Length: 248
Ligand code: PGA
Image (cartoon, rainbow, N blue to C red; front, side, top):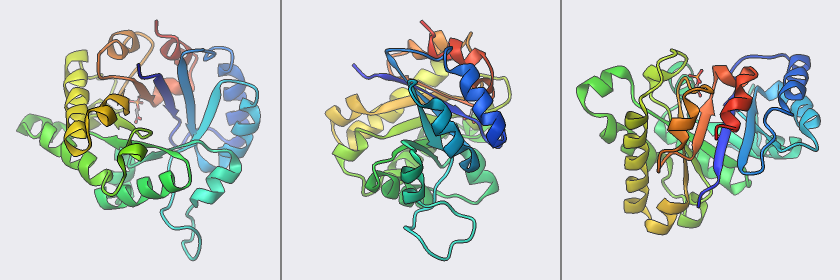
C-alpha cells in the first residue's frame, strides 16, 4: 500500500516570521501517523520553518531549485543549499513556474535528476490547460510531460518520485476537478509509468491531485485508487489544511 502524501504549496506567501506562526498554528492540526505531511515554502522561509517544525511530523520542502551545483546563476538556489537547510522535498515544474518563469519539460527533467542525485524527493507537476482539455488532448499532453520529466530517471529512483497532477483550470479557481476527472488522469499517469518502467514502479510511485483541494473535497479525491494525496495551495495556509491531512 502506498502511503498518502499531502503537501502544502505556500507559493509567494508568508514572511519568515509569519511562516513560523503558521507552522506553529498548523502543527497540532496536521499531526498524523499515516500521512506524510510536507510544507513547501518560499526559499527565505525554509530555515525558520525547519526550526519551527522540529519535533513534529512536518517535513519542509522548497518550491523550486536550480539544476546546477553552484556558480554564476544569480538569484538561484542550489540543491546542496536546500539539503543543508533541512529540505526533503522540492516542487518541480509547477504550472506557475512554467507559465511565468519559462520552465519547460526539459528544465523540469534536469531539476528532477539533480534533486534525486541529492536525495531530495521531487514533487513533479503536470497538468493540462482548459483549452487542452476542451481539445481532447489532456492524456497526450500529460503523458508527454511525465515522460520527458522522467527521462534518464531509473526505475528505483522513479519509485521515490511524487507526481502532482494539477489541471491548470482548477488551480486557485475554486473549481476542483471532479473525482472522476482526477482519477481518470491519475490512473492514466500510472499506466504511463508502467509502460515506461514496469508494474512494480507504477505501483510504488505516488500521484497527487492538486487544484482547489479543501477539507470538503479531499475525502472523495483521496479515496480514489490512483490518488495518493494532494498538492494544496490556498487551503494550505489555513486551518482547513488540518482537515485535508486528516481527511478520513
Ligand atoms: P490551489 O493551488 O490549491 O490554491 O488551487 C494548488 C497548487 O497550485 O499547487
